[in-house]
Length: 232
Length: 406
Ligand SMILES: Nc1ncnc2c1ncn2[C@@H]1O[C@H](COP(=O)(O)OP(=O)(O)OP(=O)(O)O)[C@@H](O)[C@H]1O
Ligand SMILES: [Mg+2]
Image (cartoon, rainbow over all chains, first blue to last red):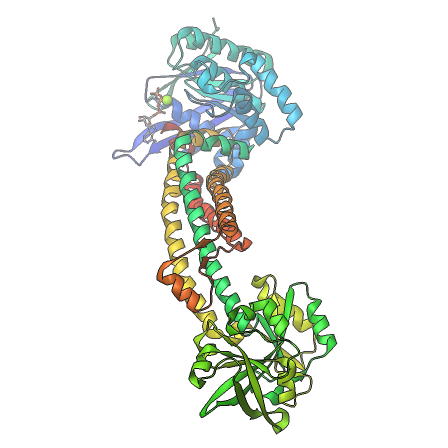
């Protein structure tokens, strides 16, 4: 058995701000090991985004604990948590991930600068990352000059920049056509294979689901099924 | 990196930024011009008044100001003048012997102030010679010539070349009496002075009063008049403060100082209103800039940027916008002040007559005092920082999930 990278115990989340409290997650257990490539699926409103946010420390569970790489992130104070994310977790959101005024180079370099990486190493790493996602010729383009698929690839490159242990992606392909979507998934799969980066992504797209090696299905805030499969 | 990010951010909506910059620019320009004019008027007024009266600073025998009598006079010595002139900010010294006497001509008698002065140094400092409207300015070595104010001449019914008799008290109760020839009649700005003063060469006055080499006061003119207090300190350090007292014009003419203070507080209100107006504009821009990027802030926090760094970027944006406007305003203000100093504006009408009556040139003076510029810049910077507090606070309160979903 590999090393545990995500360990969620009894995670529940109830939104109380609404008129009727919404139980978005109910006693979710989740165990993911280093190097896994996991799809999180389920109907709309089943709690996929909520679960990803809990694991990424963007929001606090109402009860339960989350360990990421052995650290109980549900106990970390805000600034510690932000630092933890910077060093260990990469994020890709559905769309508009990038800072619009910065070029691809600067968007990726930004994370490295937050990590205080020296300028020379930064340059090298940015080039390397853009090559990985096949966009080295777009190094000086701003997000507005890129297609949606290209923007998502830059976002993946940025998520990778800090050499995180896991990348959390909430419907990264939702706004992409099927070709760009499968292209993005191929890149993610390659990174997973070659760099041993753990991916956990939510999706509705059947073709994307097929590329995962493990599929966790949420229904009404509970884990409904958790199956290993052979990716196509 | 944050500087660059802030800079790029403010140009996302270039038009809005330009409008905000322009409002800061106009406010700073107006404030500088306004301050420059009002300060210029004050500085000119002070200069006019002190050059005839106290000087910016004055040295007396210790205790003279409390009891202004010729018995409280002091001997000038070379060493004193030399150590005063060693101070780089001291431009001129005006020795004076100030006494009171009765003047009579024919059947008229009047109490007068007798100012023993050095004709050359007064000519240099306040162009006393140009105030002569009849007759001539006296010579330094003359022993019996005097200049009298035109008001006094009228009251005594005396004309140029008439002979006045002066009777007063000399040094240590000796009697002082003499006959003097009116060399010229002066039209002085201050009505008070104009109807009461008699100028006499210092030597003649000292002789009249049996006062040897003594002075009642030594007035000091300064180059940088804004360094009043520090110059006073410097002088106090260089002379014997047991024997002498050093006073500023503010101490000797507190009414004028208070008048200026009171008058300027009105100006502060005007400038304050100006800045309040631009504050609203800047604040609105900052709020919009912050709120429309809420989601972006959420993402930045998610990828590992601390909130205080985001708040710092917001602060930088505020400072950049206002500093741009401010620097342009300072530049424009410098041009205006420079222009009007080179090519002074004379005004006309009744104001001109009033000014000329008081012996002040009818010119709008612009003060080029660097403090005005520094002060306005500081005010704008403080405003920009204060106005960034609220957006900055909002940024610190962002919940990344809510922001990303917004
Ligand atoms: N901030 C919130 N306040 C109140 N309720 C919320 C909030 N965020 C999510 N919910 C509710 O929690 C439940 C789970 O939402 P979540 O966004 O996790 O679902 P999801 O599986 O990601 O759905 P989708 O596939 O549509 O993205 C839903 O019923 C949703 O309405
Ligand atoms: Mg969702």
